[in-house]
Length: 242
Image 1 (cartoon, one colour):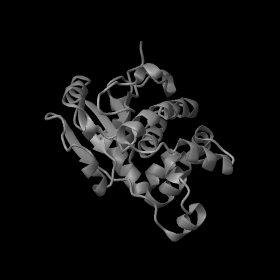
Image 2 (cartoon, rainbow, N blue to C red; image 1 turned 30 degrees about the horizontal axis):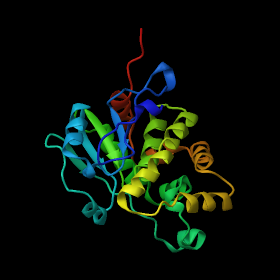
Image 3 (cartoon, rainbow, N blue to C red; image 1 turned 135 degrees about the vertical axis):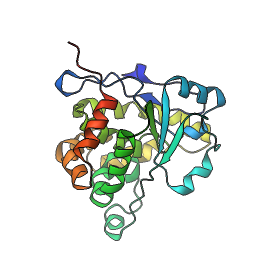
C-alpha cells in the first residue's frame, strides 16, 4: 500500500486510494479518490501534479476558521467543495473525554456519527456526485476527519475492514515530518498514552468501529440513497474483468 503515497510538495500525507480489493471481485480505481492533508498548502508545481493526477474536485472537510492556515491557492481547473466536519462540543462528550486527545484517534468516529451523521453523509454524497474526474478530500492533517470519510467511503464500496485499517495506519509515519515543518510539537506520545489508558490502539479502535457500527445503515438513516451509493461505486471501482 505504501506505493500509493503521492509526494506532493507542501503536503505530507497524500495518497491515492486505488488498488484496494473490494467485494464482488472489484478493485478501487487509481485516480478516482485521493485522501490528504491541507491541499491549499501545495506548491505551484504540486498543484500542477494534482491536476495531472486527474483530480477535478477537492472536498475540504475543515471548519471555516481553519482556512486561514493555507496559502489560499487552488489549481485553476479544480473545483473546491466545503463540507465542514464539526468538532463535538456537547456536555456529555466533554464529561467523557475531557481534554484528552480523542479527536486524534478513531475513538471519536462513533460519537461523531451519533451526532453528525448528516454532515458525514453530505461529504460522501459530494464525493459520489462530483464532476467527472478524481476527487481529493482532506482535513488539516489527513488522518482523522479524512480517515473517517475514507473509512465510510471504502466500506460503502465494499473494501474489507482490515484493508481500511491498513490504509489508516499509513498516516502515522507521515505525521512527524508534518509537525516539524509546521514548527509544532509532535503529539504522538500523548496520543499513544491516551490510547493505552483506553486499552486500545488507533488500529484496534478503527477496526472495532468498523465491526461494531453498521456504517451503511447509519448513512442511509442520515439520508444517503441507493443512488448515492451506486454513483460512489461507479466512481471508485474498476469494472470486474471478464
